[in-house]
Amino acid sequence: MSHIPYCNDASMSLQDVTVELDGYMALSNVTFDVDAGTLMGVVGPNGAGKSTLFNAIAGLLPVRQGSVTLNRVDPRRGELAYVPQRDSVNWRFPVNVMDVVMMGRCCRLGWLRRPGRKDRELVKTCLCRVGLWDQRTAPMTELSGGQRQRVFVARALAQEASVLLLDEAFSGVDAGAREILVEVLQALRDEGRIVLLSTHDLNNLSRRFDQVLCLNRHVCACGAPSQVLTPEVMKELYGFQFSMNGEG
Image 1 (cartoon, one colour):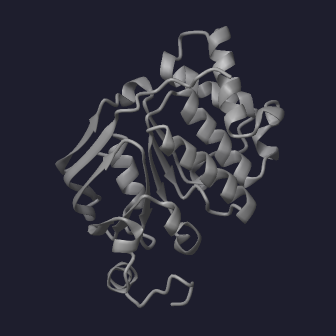
Image 2: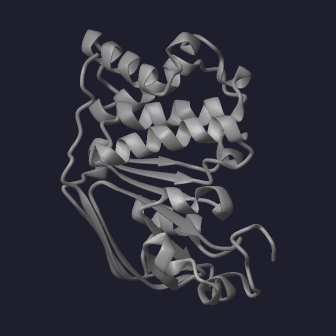
């Protein structure tokens, strides 16, 4: 199986990033760094700015002040991939699995270039990587939530992305599909990619992360899960005592 090329020496640095939306301070002085080979969870309540953060990193929202620095990552060449929340995707659009993943090649190569044999081989490699080659001709509308998310991860791989941003990728996904996705993301981390995943599922996922960014419009804490997922930080995030056993 052929290798999926990408830069494995990427890094990301945010310094005092502030984003204002219609007069509302969505993010305030957000600062943190991420090195290559990191799986980072981004946690916080609804309205904490997780999606805003991803949009700012991806260059889809203007930063009022501060800076987002992507070292050895060129978003214009598809080296940053953003998987949005499922609710923002038009699932009625008539495309199959292979079409969606091939869009990753078009993003990388330019929409005017017709994909060739090597592109099709790479798309096959990406679909095999996420365990969906046998479903390559299936319409997206017929897939489960977990399968759809794996298709988008395959599309990110087809872009040769060094940085992956996944916004609530596990929302509505059953436990079995979640485990498959976690294994794929951990493998990408082990290859040197940067993976940021926003989630509400702290009980099942917190120990899978290398780093956790606790966000509530500002950075409440950032570091190893054992160091930052403390009762004090959870109270600052959610406004009440939060138990990692699922009891509030």
